Image (tube, rainbow, N blue to C red; front, side):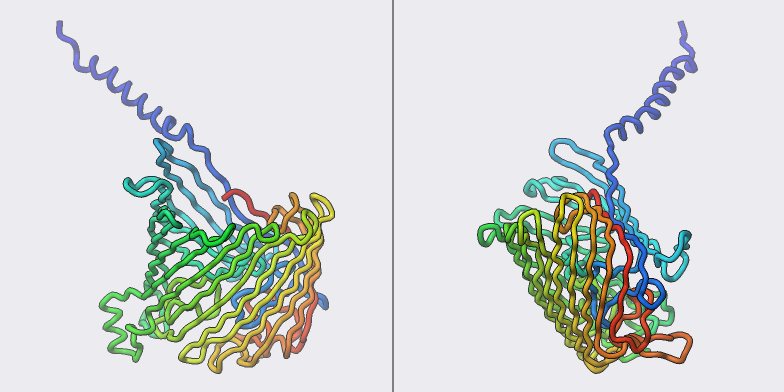
Length: 459
């Protein structure tokens, strides 16, 4: 008996359709999304009128943040474990950041003071490369990469984050080895015919971490080498139209030695020494360690810092502290010396309520050719008192709701008044880009007050 081809195909077709519907469900059945992030927001005013002024020394890379943040900022992340079999895992992470000027209910992200940014989008594969020790992780994508920061002033002194690829945490028997290639870009509108033509800066990051030294202590060593990668047409353009020597100022390196001591008066202490040259030195901003996008930057920088968290009275009184000295000596005299020191003791009345005091000091000694602020020495001292309600005891416990009052004092005028419309205020002692500028031009001190929430969760 002959069987119809149409009859035999129907069960097969039905099976294929059914499998195609079931397979996506099976593939995602065990995926549990991970929601993580950070946020801060609040309201503040300046004594004498106007919204909250934020006090930051002109030319300083950071400011002491308690009662001194003028924006709404959030990082919202989503991730998931996508594969976990026979000791090998693949994980996906993403993160979007938002910042607004904390002015209204509806704040358009098209405004100059507001922004949305894609910060992370990467995949890690732990134990994905055969032959490497257990725990080695292959990764690729855009990510925060092994950032080192000081929480009190939100200062990132070692940060090569960005799009890249690497293998991290290779167990060497004594410590772990991590290798990464990351990229950042800059523009050169002053020289290239089109300001949208980007300069690609590649950085190679090598770290040897978790090296045991003394009981409770570990050492971390790192070298970062970066240089601009120019296509032939850009090299030809510079050769023919400018006197820029792109073989000199485009490259630079940074070395880091860092020691972390755990079990340090109930907390931990970190001391770091860094030296950097030429194009890897960030001019005035945060996030030091990756290429700066400048072909003309030559000079050197060295930095020593110490920061930590200790308990002065167990479960009653703890302390965040930091001290930083940085010297950027640039060949074109656009550098500066920066000294910063701060403490934040917190007293816990119970498991929920605490009182925090933060005292921070920044001193700037610029070279003769700085731009964007007055070239004289200046300093800013900031003192904040905050009453807090938190989800437990400890300086790093969040979420927190706080009421605060801040007093700041500086030497000389706050700003220089400009008559042109494009630059109404120029920085003198105070930075003009850290928030509203609601103290008078010639003021030498100021008071702000308000409320803020701060929260972080997940990882």
